[in-house]
Image (cartoon, rainbow, N blue to C red; front, side, top):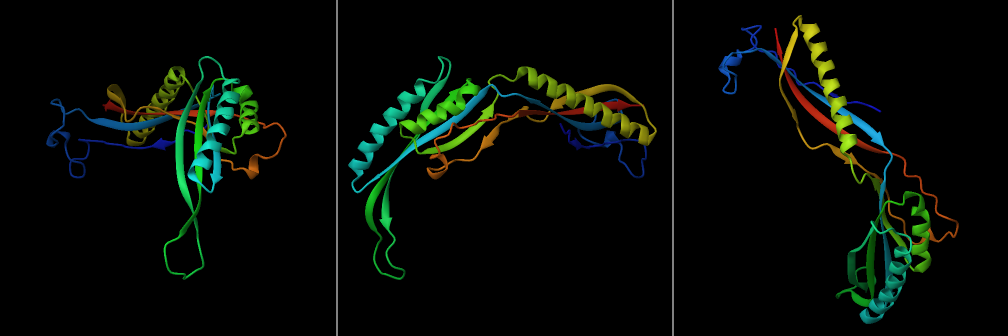
Length: 243
């Protein structure tokens, strides 16, 4: 685990010729307290409990109707095979459907518009499943049923409250350590916390994997899947009063 450090230090009212008095600022508190402001970051890792994988069926035909019909047959088989592997709380949705013409590129420099020589249909189905251990078998089942592309795959957390709290605690400890270091360097003492805010909602960073085409998925050996870990990060901005 690595914790990034971002310093945003503000020492006001000590050296009047160099640093302007806080009283001169529009947002200054009425008692002219001197402050140090820091920004701490915290990050924790956790084992994912949710996998999101998208598989697609891609078909071609000289006529649009032929490509559509073939794709519909295969996609129905793929959907049925995937549903057999997911639980009652899992989700299966169609996320993309496209029908596009295929063109004959022709000879370089040849005048005229490209000629349509066929059509291609892509139908993508996305699965959100909590059965991480069975993800490899799920992908294999989809491919065996007719899917010829794994468009995307990622691992994340279905709930993250516990990880968010831990990340915020680390961010707070980091902010305190930064403030203490600055105070020591300047020969001042920290007093109470005047304000503490998060600059943005803490973020879960999922583990993503690239898409796989037909050639990459034609091996019939079982597909091994290692989910690894995901990261949850938080940033906390704290302003301390100093003596």
